[in-house]
Image 1: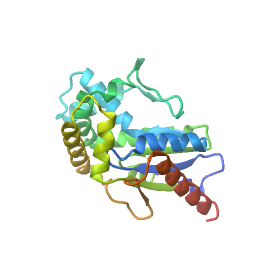
Image 2: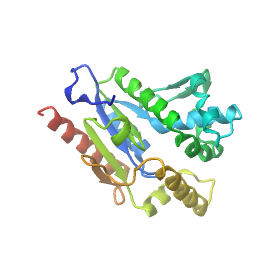
Image 3: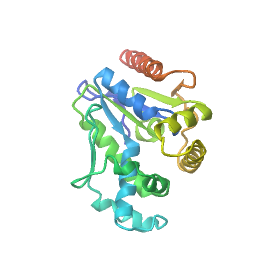
Image 4: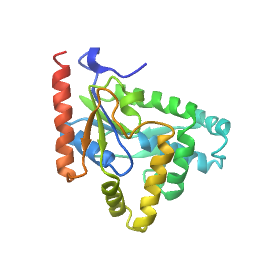
Length: 236
């Protein structure tokens, strides 16, 4: 089953799918676009991070796919979809900040390559998107335009040059050297590219290159694509 809002009733939310590499700004831009449009916002990467945090807390060997898969039944996950009230929980534990720790970042790619984990979380994302009460939802991640919501009303690849992405990530992580941040970004992209294709746009996906755009200009460019695509789809 895939999310496809083109033929669904009016009370089903508009779905916007946004993919992009690390440092492209997809999370912050997606959240801002959702806020402006009055849409819900779903950070799918947070679920992978939360599951990695959960696996680490259980002391599971990340290289043991069966052990990792065995945790799924006990993974009690919640994420807020209000762009102005973002929170991530596992059980009764608020892990919004904890999932951004370096040890979690280092473990994400290992658990993300387990097929059962990807299938489980993909189904979770689709349920969350169906159940939002706002008129639309912006879903961002690595394989949203191709796997999670290939039938979305608007599909966008948000990208930027490697130099621009490294510079932006360095500003976000002031506690590490530019060289360390650059190496982490390259390693993350390399590891994730072995699991999903997120560096080039699939058929029907609009590319927004933010290399020479500031934050506000990038938001405007993304919203332009969304409004154009949803207007076109309403007449299909």
